[in-house]
Amino acid sequence: MDMKLFTIGPVEMYPETLEIRARQIPYFRNQSFSRVVLESSEMLKNLLDAPADSECIMLTCSGTGGMEAAVMNCLGINDRALVIDGGSFGNRFCEILQTHGIPYDRVKVPEGEALSSDLLDAADGGCHTALLVNYDETSTGQLYDIEMLADYCHRNSLTFIVDAISAFLSDPLSMRASDIDAVIVSSQKALALAPGLSCVVLSPRMKERILSSDECPSYYFDFKSYISNGKRGQTPFTPAVGVIYELHQRLGSLISNGGAAVEIARVKAIANDFRQRVIELPVELPSYPISNALTPLILRSGGARALLDKLEQDGFVLNPCGGKHSDDMVRVAHVGNHSVSNNIELVEAMTRALLN
Image 1: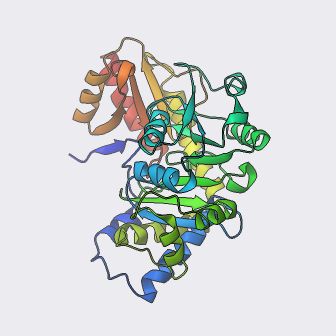
Image 2: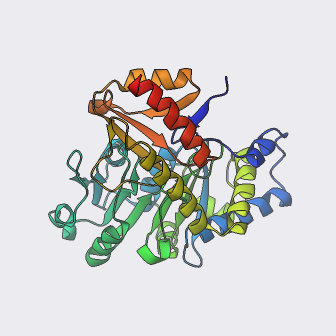
């Protein structure tokens, strides 16, 4: 039985991507691959509305590797970070900072509540040098108010680092408008590619800071080496060659079809359609703002594991939740190669599983 992925990563891939994956991976230390890297970098910056002279760093690693690389290069032991911690991935930023000996404080978002300006204002912005946030806290689906965070960073002169791994191409994001210093994206979410590639896009201001610093405590993840090699469309070490070819095709398709705004509108329409279709089921949505990328469903009677098992028997794979919500919440993703017809099929299967 073919399984339909409603997971937040990996996601359902497009036929064009699968066609590229079926080909022999070519050699990469040549002008042909350099052209692919340079063009992909420019297209990615275009979709993020990055300022002129921004830098795209392509890393062969997971999204967490991208998060750690951003921390190692953009911050140092003389910084003090403020982390928005509303779930597993906010906590992951804290663990990364702790690993590298960078002082930090966290804004703890209460369970089931939205991040508010009062919570932010309670933090002493004057003692911090940077703010780190997972724009979409994927573990709960909460979408934070990026304009509120950007304003807070501006008022307090903070470096602004945004994990947009699950929000990119799902929710509106402009590096230029929000004056973001570093944005982290990854291949296996709305880009709908294979896992293994993360990109960190740096503002010109952050690029200059990195080039003038010797602080990065890593050989493999030192961005100075990536910036130097990137001038000729190469990476310092063997990249995820096949995934970069997938990226090149996918970015070109997105731009030719109208760019980020069109893709975000498509994902939003699919998400809203799904949320309307589950109204009659014994489930609830959280009260906080949620990303277009996924829908967290609270099961009134629990039984999340049983529901997931029943749906897998029907050919549908959803994301479980960990921690205190392991029995009463599931997450349904809307990114990747999905359509309203897929929603109809899934909701029919959920109806059988929950009501019969």
